[in-house]
Image 1 (cartoon, one colour):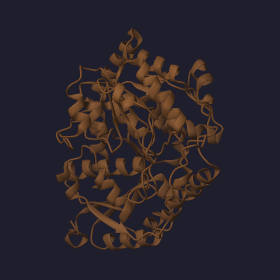
Image 2: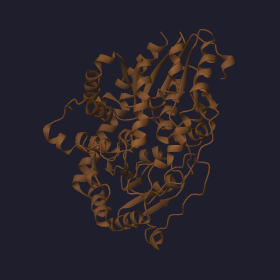
Image 3: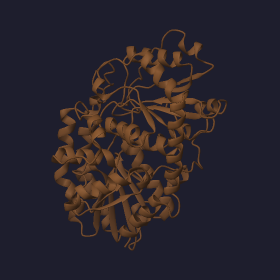
Image 4: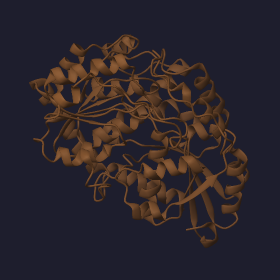
Length: 463
């Protein structure tokens, strides 16, 4: 649907994501959910490169739903797209900084797009990443437009960050507070400043949308409402926005899914560290040896962190220990291309997920009832890992945050994998994860908590 086909009495929704995979993905899922469930016109606004990235990596979304979304490409200045520094002890993807800096120059074309849409429709509703607040500020100059922040992180993380930045105490049991990871080393100073530079433009918003469910984080949603009560913003917990029923499998011939079909139920550990983590050769060797020694089945997605432009540059050819793939071929699969993560997690043969604990991965694993071996790398991940392990009790820790610059040994990896996949404790954790997943999926169905919140949000913006 292009803007010339808009009807004057309609409400148009404009998604403005931040250009990182975990952010692009969540707003595309929300775009499809709103467009397919409520039949409203939805626009997705970003650079041509990042809009293309969102489309080519749209795991488990129905192509017919994606076809309804109107992608609006905004010209973006050229930016450097260097490879990640895989030897860095600090895992924060600082190599993406040039692409983030370039996206901060999109304010004017975004404003003119808002202006165009607002002249053709009854109301423009902008749903944007908090890191794009500066870019969408001109929404306040339009009489028939309003904006909402879509939070791509857990409510627990958001609540902790707000408390820590305002000097308020976090409402957790004494014992838990002692083990809450510090914010030390979670990001670079440049990124901290970039985040802070967005806050003057956040007051424009009319409310907040969270990609979580009351079933997962009800207590922390209530606490968040308490600590932000003076802001007077509406809050909706509408998640998970991913397709909880996988009616559309993106690629049934996928090597991972074919391989999983031949494995026993709940026997496979899926290993992936997202799109912003790179391991050194030494770290890869320890992980390979740990997996081999554990004697457990696994699918390991072995990839470097994304570049700022994923369509440029050669991928690094990561060397595994000699003969490794041959020796493990009966029990393990190493995948070097993009993997259909949601379908892998939903598969009945998958029984665990070794993860960096980005919120996308956490919410996908929680929804599909899969327990997590948490190995956080940066940003919100250490606090997400704590939520999974200490509060929801559906995971184990691979490496404590305090030891983030130490090499994780093969024996540590072997022990965690065995504990999660082949012990009574692991079975207990799996049972809890399974029960939580069931409750979360129910919350997205008719009359479920999340579906009712989404209905309430849609009723509010179409009032």
